[in-house]
Length: 151
Image 1: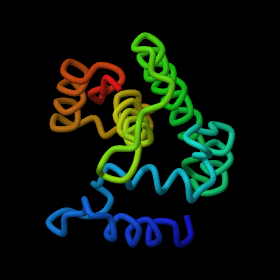
Image 2: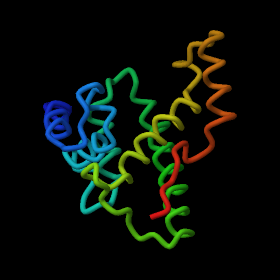
Image 3: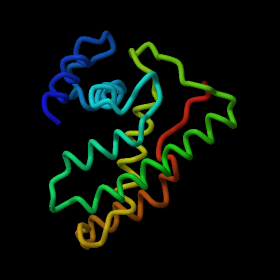
């Protein structure tokens, strides 16, 4: 990932909406920065081909089979979010006072949750706390796993 996290940490911390009580990666605009800096987010559109290319280059060789799971999560989440946008007649989410559109953050959160819920068995730690967390997430956190703004 090179210096992308450091760049985005610096970027987020200079925003008026930054709060020093919380790490920069929790800020709504952090995913937007990560996707832009890696070339995956161009003019507000997520380039899934670039996401896949990036993952194939940066995910450790022993975990390469995770790329397919992550890409399925991207497809599922983007389909769900875009369906919501179409139903709500939203072409693109507006830039919020935080300094970015919520779109990248919604995708990022959804992909994390979807990948967790569909974790491959070889990587899943089949223990009570993990299974309880997964059961809770499956019951209480339907797709797209994030609240969707109305405009």
